[in-house]
Length: 259
Length: 153
Image (cartoon, rainbow over the protein chains, first blue to last red):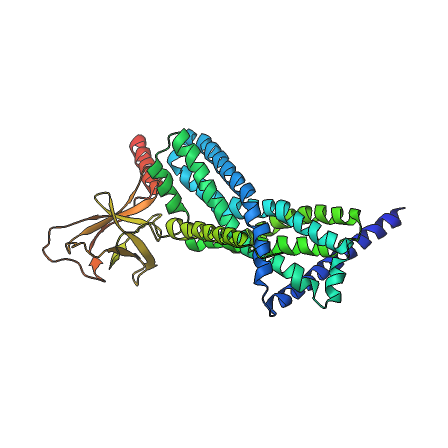
C-alpha cells in the first residue's frame, strides 16, 4: 500500500518534469514559428481584439475598484499617523510595482487564457488542427503563435491601463470623497514612483506574465485530451497553473531584481 | 476571420490608449522630481549629510530650484554633494548651503541661502559655507549626556 503511494508520487514527479520539458519545447517552437515569414498580421490583429479589447471592460472595472479600495484602506491607516498626504505614494507604488501587473495577469488568465485553452482544445476535439496539417499549415504557425504574440503585446498595455485607472480610483476616494489635498496626492505620487525602478520593473513583469499566461493557455489547449472532459480539464488547469505560476514568478522577479 | 475595418480601428484605439497610459506612467510619474530648468552644476562639501539622497530637493526660501544629482566622498573623506540648479539663477558666490529636514522625520533637502557678493556662481563652482545635517540620534545622545552630567553634580 505504502509502496503504491510512493510509486504514484514518483510517477507524478516524473510527469511534472516531463510536462515542464514539453512546455519548454513548445515555447521554443512558438518562438521559432513567430520569426518565420509570412508575418500573419491579420491573425495578430484579430487575436489582439479577442485578448486585449475584450478584456478592457474587466480590466477597467477592476482597476478602478482596486484603486478605490487602496485609497480607502490607505487613508484609514495613514490618517492615524497624520500622514494622509502620503496616500498618493502608497496607492501609486502598490499599483505600479505589484498590483497592476499581477492582477492584470490573473484577470487575463481567467478571461482570455481560459478562452484560448477552450478554443484550441475544441479544435483538437473536432480535428481542426489535423485539418490544418493536411493543408500543410502548421497549427503552431497559424493558431498558436498569433495568440501568444497578441497576449505578449496586450499584457503591458492592459497593465498600464489598469494602473492609470487604479490611480484615478485612488484619487476619487482619497481626494474627492475623503478630502486629501489634490496637490499632495499628485506630488506624492510623482515623487514616489521612479521610471528606472518602478515603471520599468512593472513593464518587465507584465511582459513576463504575458509570455507565461500565453504559453500555459496554448500548451494546455494544444495537449488537451480529445474529449469534452479533456477541454474542460485544459481550461481549468490553464487558469490554475497560470495564476499560481504568475504569483510565484512575481515573487522571484521581485526578489531577484528588487522591482 | 474576414476583414473588418471597425475591428481594426478598435484594436488601433486600444493600442493607442495603452501607449498613452504607458507614456503617462513613464513621463509624468517616472520623470524626475524636479522638472524645472537645470543645467548649473555646483558642488558643496559637508561633514555630515544624514539621509540626503540623489534627487533630494534643493530649495531657496522654500522654492524648489534644483535637485541633488550626486553624492561621493572627496580626498579628505568628507561628503561631496553635487547639485543641479536652475541655470538662470544668479547665485552670489558667497551663497551658503545647509541640509535640513522637512518635518521631524521627513525627507532631507538642501537649503541655499544667497549671500551678498556681486559676482555669480558658475558651473563647477564650490559652495564654501556649508552646514551639516543634524542627526537626531546624536542630538538626543548629547542631550542625554548633558542631562546625566548635570544630575550627577
